[in-house]
Image (cartoon, rainbow, N blue to C red):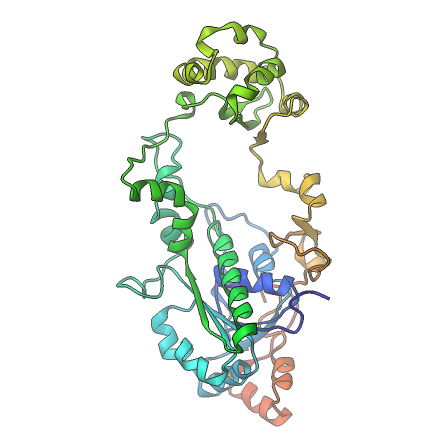
Length: 410
């Protein structure tokens, strides 16, 4: 049996970080009810744009809202709020990333919902935290996590290069894992105390945690220097190189004193062992630019497949600079369970991305196609104790909308 079977979760979040946390809960067996307004979560309908691949399949919605049930609910109406309150009374977890001022207007703050259910875990995601002058500000991972916390600045390809943009959802997914961890910690505490609590995380806090080593250096008074361009790397044996077929890989030899001779043998350049410029780690660092130029020529002479076999045979640490297209045919991603089957022709793919951890002896739920807008509205109302007459009244008032399962973007 999945470890979270029987856990009842209300996903009243939009876009990515909050729904990611509830997707993980659903993967582990929780019954997650995805609440959307009658016209749907903006993320459901979000179109393409620069850096967003065009597809007839709503791939973002699939990966971030799979295995949930859908309820379309208008919280601006009194009847809609009453439905939510009844759901909260029997829920274990409530997740939201609604801006703080909107939570007050909709009456979905912790202080609004906690009196309804003493065992409720209220999980909140914000851009900049729950307190402070900027707490009400809206933000995305691109602004609050990537740009604000020094990450964007420090990963430039060279000191004078423009700051690199983030990818869609790049920071939201790990932030969702942080929220999941907070929820599970609160559930553990509830087992001991019998009472629920509020947990929270923010995009900014997660960005600082990503960048914690460099931020802590600055906090300790160190000057954090920008990284030099690849050709001027501090270490030639921890650097990027391009092969004859155009593929890049990252060589990452950390224990230089131990592995330098093995690297030289692997690349077939024994004369480097007798070159005083490279005889010791300090010497190699002092002459890193020269060594980079030498290794550039060496690695440019053979294709990636050849170099992979050679470096593997000598036990060296390295990694291909993969593309997203590589993932489809990566046997290790399949064998490890990082990619898993999704058996639904509406998904447009036979695989989806797994949540990134496993419990031995507790299989995850097979991923299901995400709900259409309000697909399970009536079903959920019946489970909550509404009569058929009450349900018809809610539908007529459009406080609740019953949708369909035709497609994820419906």
